[in-house]
Length: 218
Image (cartoon, rainbow, N blue to C red):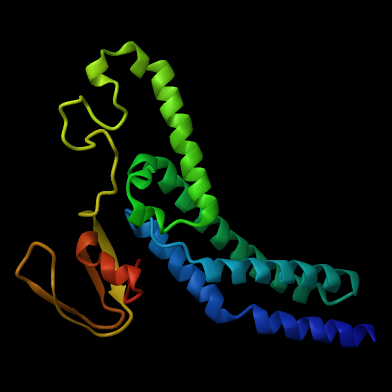
């Protein structure tokens, strides 16, 4: 009976821990690491990944207590460690970007919509804490004309004190399918990309295609 239960758990594990989701997680992780701006949060993928991690942990615990070959257990543990690393690194990278560009995010509804609900809460707390800290430590001691957190002075027309992602950064990328020819931003040049051909290009020229999943960053 125990053997049947173990086999059933093993079948569930194989069904859920799919190569497809691991590869998808690896891809969104690479894109997030390489992109200068924060990308759309992959809600469905992250939910599935968390479910898979829970199942892997339960499977490893059951295998360990059932006397399953230690080599088999170690292979499952390696899968678990890899998935956990990718997930944690993905989430950590996003939090670092939120911390770096909190004011830019708070003033840009389109960027806010890329965040998960938890990330929106984190961004709000970061912004409030930073505003309070700057007000108490610096701004309260400055002349009235220079007390704006977002502008150098009251005569500034733009939020020139807000760090923003450098979208003109060069990135290495590759297309997932044939693309082109398409026009690059600020140029008359046309570019076409073949699948898996590496290309070095300004991020802003391909950002829409990255967000649409047509181009991957490396």
